[in-house]
Length: 142
Image (cartoon, rainbow, N blue to C red; front, side, top):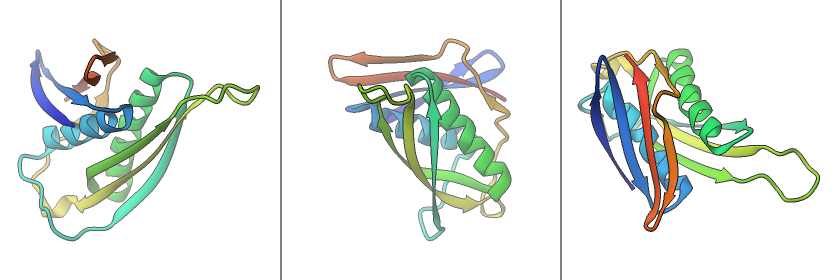
């Protein structure tokens, strides 16, 4: 999994690839952290878990990143080393929801010089399967 930060008018975008849907979600989240902070400490800090549900893959990616921004604001941490497990809706008559179980290492904001990202956007969002896995492109409002 990997990501690159992309210039986008007054905003910033993250382009990511991964061998699986799980990997590309984690890569986009790590890219979002890199957009907020140039140097991320690699030591210590506690992990936290959370889950997100949505009616589609793109909505799940949006809600996942939005949840990380929320966790940043509530916990006063920078979510890094992101891990995501994405589950597609079941084929039975149950709820038609995508589910993400995630975790992140929370670096206290007092330990880093972080830039503010206001929000994730649907502008130009792409989440597509490729011959090599998955591709994602997400624009963030700064």
